[in-house]
Image (cartoon, rainbow, N blue to C red; front, side):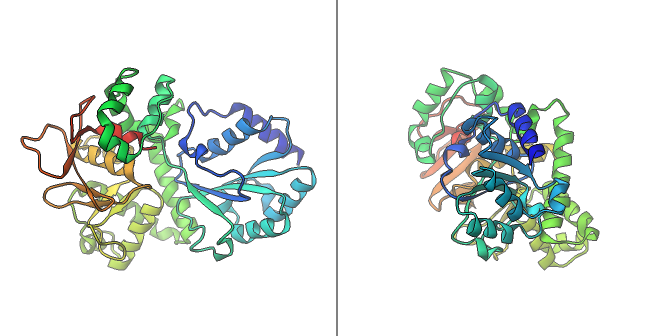
Length: 392
């Protein structure tokens, strides 16, 4: 136990978290079992350590961070460790990468039932299905998603400001005033392209080549998060990787499932499953037409965020594609984004119609909002595209 406390103290004292994450204020920390999901690289470990630093003194043994990668847990179960920690005065146990324990859901349930005075906060892969695949956790676990940096969080980190988030309704109705307030403090356009290229994943702060690091992380998402959690044989790894590449290269609106199946030499059903796994890993987003959803055929498969496009196709990035990817990523998670019709690119929440534009429209269509690239402030239904990065 002493070695865990020493590791905890060192990690908490050295955690690099230069910006306040929006999710920190959304979680009800009084809940006894809290699950934080997120794709690899978005900062889940730093999130746990920051919570510990902000709420407990380093020498306070009521809180402890552990990582299930530790070989100690090959001989000790989570519930056994939790009981020992509680008996030593522990009250908040932070468990990183809980899925590395094959019996993690049973162990968490055991902790919940047998150690009622203990609060557990754990992190897991976005590929995990906390409730759907683990019914024993239904009704007791509160699940949250940690996303990569929003453009707002990125700006705050780069400038030291404390710019606040705004709802979609506020952005649509008050964008002129909101943009003016922000632009008095910083010119967002000075930072927007850098965010598009490398601002979504917090590890751009590390002194390493970002693109190389992102490619490594993407491989880990597939090799560990998808293959391990979904229990897919290693021999199918190359097929999933090739599928991701083909989805990135093919910029047609509707994915050709039959052709993709031929290209990676598998069945249509398997391609559909693989695309879903890639979406669970936050490598792609699946978009449907208005009124449709799974298991219907996707209307479009896009990269989850524009950083991924630059990592896969560094010399083939089209401006319209990266802007559309930024837009749908900014709204993903809190809003339903559908593929639009001939008059718009996207329909949001079944009613708001948006076109993503690099130039001002020659004439504005009725009922259409225009998310405009390259402008600091908008006018009426022309909204600066960068402002959608302030939704969280």
